[in-house]
Image (spheres, rainbow, N blue to C red):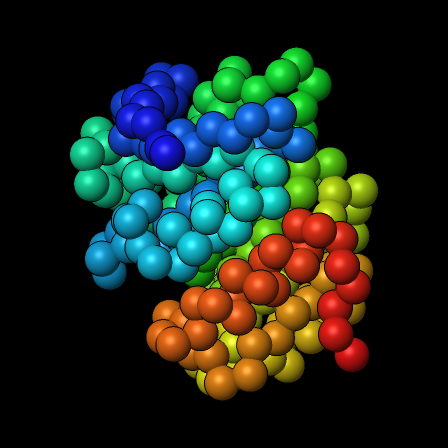
Length: 209
């Protein structure tokens, strides 16, 4: 069962959020939604699927609306202020976890770009899951191999995240790559295999070859 939460970004807006606590959490994950100017918000089916899988794996979750989306204050900042939203959400989730717990981030599409900018290179140890990162629309060149586990997951029919570009990014960053056959950018009809891919990454299972 999730509960409502308000996150205050330092020197910024108050954000609408939903906290998903679990008993004896292994850690926590903030989950970031797709582009708000194209209808993205924290109730997106991919976001909800990711939070469900993370909680089932024993991680507390926090999904939130970026500034200007849903019930969050402020206006869309074209990717400039949104990484601060992610960092504020991470700090908020940490206060609901045992001391020393690791907080990771998963992001979908626009949310993947913001999750990456929020955690790399400033929090290199944070687990980072990038779901359908829009490699043709945002710069991911700053991503490098590091101590934190990195997931790249996308479908073979995603025009915004070409599989070959994902392969190159995975090779450069030593990421765990998981490809979902037939899935488009929105994972229509593919939410179950997407959840399986995220769950396997959380469990530490090696990608299928």
